[in-house]
Amino acid sequence: MTVRTRLAIAARIALAVFGGYGLAGLATAALALALPMGRADATSTATMLSFAVYAAAVLWTFGVRRLATAALGLLLPALALGGLVWTLHGGAG
Image (cartoon, rainbow, N blue to C red; front, side, top):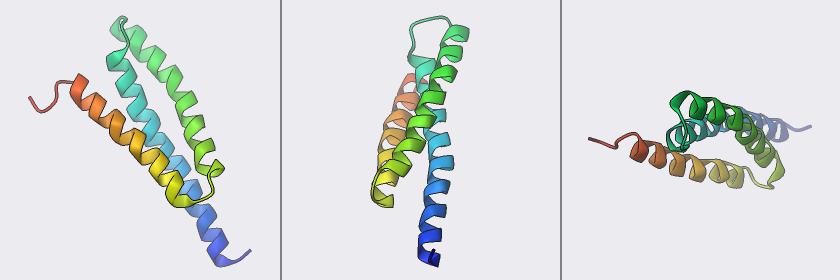
């Protein structure tokens, strides 16, 4: 394997691990705030669902052809979930 190939694989691994973790964390926060149930139940449900989000993020990162597409595929949902969390949590006020 060339150095370039090794760096590309390392970049995908880093994106999958850290980007997937960030996306799963934001999904957990958004779901915990949005689910129409008690606070403890919503948090537990959101946490369980975050494992599926993390797995999907990792699969997405290694399933697409280009690293830029993988990064964009994690960034856009993360921005949307971040905005949802910000809105549901009360925004700037």
